[in-house]
Image (cartoon, rainbow, N blue to C red; front, side, top):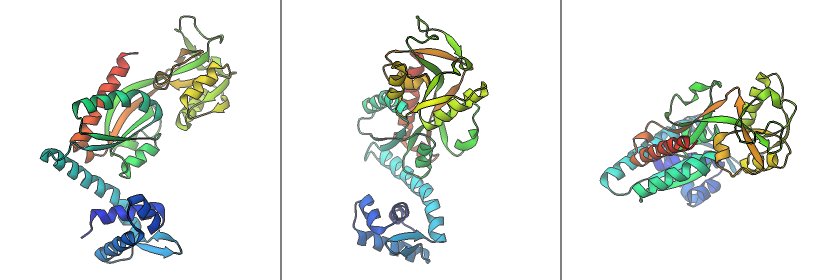
Amino acid sequence: MIEARHLRVLRAVASTGSFSAAGRELGCTQPAVSQQMKALESSVGTPLLVRTGREMRLTQAGEALVRHAAGIIAGLTAAEEEVAAIAGLRAGRVRLVSFPSGSSTLVPTALAALRAAHPGTRVFLEESEPPKSVELLREGDCDVALAFRYEGAAGAEEWDDLVVRPLLTDRLVALVPEGHRLARSDGVGSVAIGELARESWIAGCPRCRGQLVEVCEGAGFTPRIDFATDDYPAVVGLVGAGLGVAVLPQLAIDSVRPRGVRTVTLEPVVRREIVALTLPDLAQVPAVTATLDELARAGARQSATR
């Protein structure tokens, strides 16, 4: 009989490489970790770890068990949460991972509404960009992941095994200094991205950076990127200081107070789909369902304000 607690310990040992590090991660002693690993190996009837000095290496059987552990633990978590909610023992717990501009726009609105409706629900927030956030979900390290993908980008099938809740469609916009030749006094206007071919560029997160290069090369030029940062306020500040131009998702601009810059509609139109993802088993958990519902409402409100 394989016990869930033993699987959790095995995953911790596999990710940290030692019993002592796994114990620190799990909040228990090194002997307790060793004892549980012996019990698990006894249950399955084969070694799961090879001890090489101070580190641990998984055997083939260990690798197979770790590979299945995330789905098993997710299923058990779903069962525990649903039973607890039905029995009225507790309202639930949700581990949410979001990319930064989602954390500062969609997430606060959604979590405020969730707390008002379900004050006993606890939400733990961590920031990570896709595809890392999606990996965390599949590995059982979170319950809901906010993610995005660009229209027409390869890998549309990468979420086929997940429950996908659409939140909003986000459009890329050009960002130029206030005194730039393409800035409009009324803040309204459009610009073909080819008109920015000779500009200095300020690039955002790695995935957005890749999309920028792809769009520019589609227009016949390669952008000269002078600055690159994952921090959207820094991108806006660099543009405002006249150091270059940028292309950012509208949601990223909504998350900061742009000063000294103008937004210009970009042609061709480039959009990204913002979604909330979860595993099929977790989608049945009331606290997770409530979180998805509030995120969808927050996305609708965000779209209505544009």
